[in-house]
Image 1 (spheres, chains in turn red, yellow):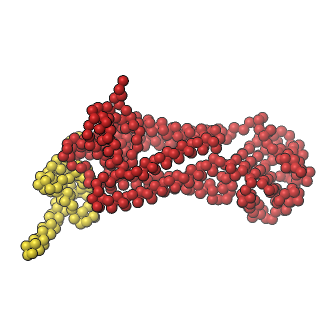
Image 2 (tube, chains in turn blue, orange; image 1 turned 90 degrees about the vertical axis):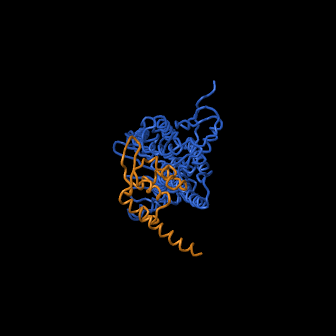
Image 3 (tube, chains in turn green, yellow; image 1 turned 30 degrees about the vertical axis):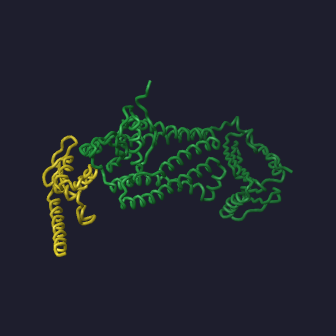
Length: 416
Length: 104
């Protein structure tokens, strides 16, 4: 049975109105006539026709309008009187079909260029604002040294930083490209060119964005924990479903904004709740055998562990493991950083030891006790550096003896 | 608007205001402009729509009739002043030009 209707997913930007009109004409010549916007462009089968379309950017249109509103229909009346029938509109796009061969162009080339550039620029500004947020987020994760140390051992954070950096560059790059395009289009307009709203670059920008999203999805799948990937995928799928819903419902702009705000709130809420549930999943019965060191390894009998928190991060730069063990009347808090990068060990050593010296005054050297490259003690905490490892013990009630140090190194397979 | 931009009216603006010296429905203005200019000036529907919105915002024209989506407009006193100034300017231009061309 022959198809009478089909939907095509083919995105166009405000700077591609003439490409858009040509596409619709080409489809009409094959017998597919544009009917309306649905999930994509909806075409109905009919007789092939040499139809002329005009795609215009309505200056009073809204980015959130999914269907013609009162002002668009008012505008359509003017155009119909001049020989252009409105087929459908979405956001600021209005699609007209010529009904009279002597129809006057709806807008002058200058007006078309101005409307399209204004609409496109407004969209870009929104994206640029998000790009700036990416840059701020990236800076907060990387530039204070303490944050950098926390971030560098997490593949998820490193990947997120790479993504932030990519999208910031992408959005800035697109913004700069737009100004060059606008300048050259103005010059072409002044020299009498008419079909100005064409460009191939937007197709390239779209493809870059789609490829990037696919690569990001794959990278997250191989890099982060399953629950984090689940959140990421959940957000992407939800956004896609929302777009489908809005395309189907075609609400007015106020309802559209309301739906999107509600959706954003619900997604954030779900992410926060789900993340908390993952962070609080520590089963005391299962964990002790995964902990490298307990108080009994120090020769101290403190009874059973009453509660415990462990944080482990691994990245291509190494690993950072934090352990918080609580007993009835004691606790053991320590950190193990493993990395082959000397510059990173230097940075961590400087950050911890220098910070401690600044706060608590001079530290006691105990390199010989640990048989390490460097070791320091401030009366409460030990900082120990080896060739590719740093150990930090915090809040110890008393100094460690050489026997206890030997037991620690043995438990961590660092003895001899 | 003319003052803010070039201190003059463009041809389409001039003819639209001329057309609105009599009450006219928005969609009929295009035809009136064509008649007044003897076919020399045509205004696209999008151009007209945008200009009517700007003229109304500046108080140069005002709507008179609202029927569903169809509005009629007429020029205001402020608009008449703008039109008269432009007419005087154009008269001065042609007078200066006439002096030059007749003495060639």
